[in-house]
Length: 190
Image (cartoon, rainbow, N blue to C red; front, side):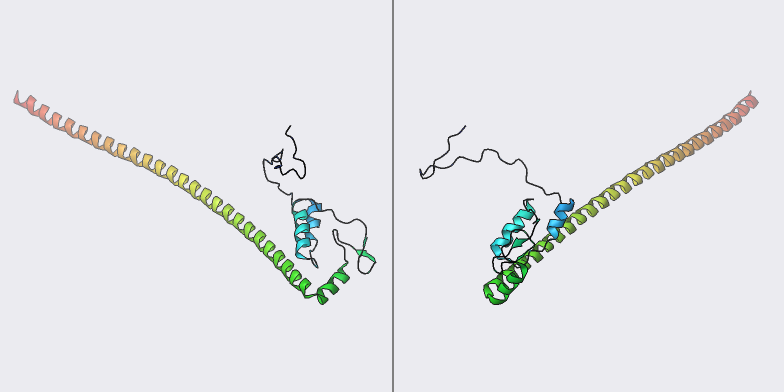
């Protein structure tokens, strides 16, 4: 076991002991994950938005089970997790403070960009799948054409063999007829 660096000694900390062998992949099909991903992220500053979004992405987000107390109005009206202001007070703050308006616009823009990125990735996946199916269909058609070409070549060879055989048989008949006529000529000459 490696020795840990004490705080304030100036020594570099050792590397993380257990490295990830593969990236975390979220199961998007579970009911809980679907419900969590449907919760809107509005009336948040940029930093809070990023933190909550990270929690959603890496399955660390825990939905709120009971109502929480708002810091501003002191009412138990917070229904969403990781918030300190209820929606009413947060929208009031957004209306009053122009800094919050920029943050709100930034969060909306980020959500739109995330949705577009997901849609683009889905479209690319569908396109790749379609191309794979098309390639498989083309390959199958090429195999069928090769089979048909091979069978038609065999039929043509059989027909050519038959023609050659027929031609050969005709040649034999002609030679027999010629031989017979020569044989008769030979007999007559004797």
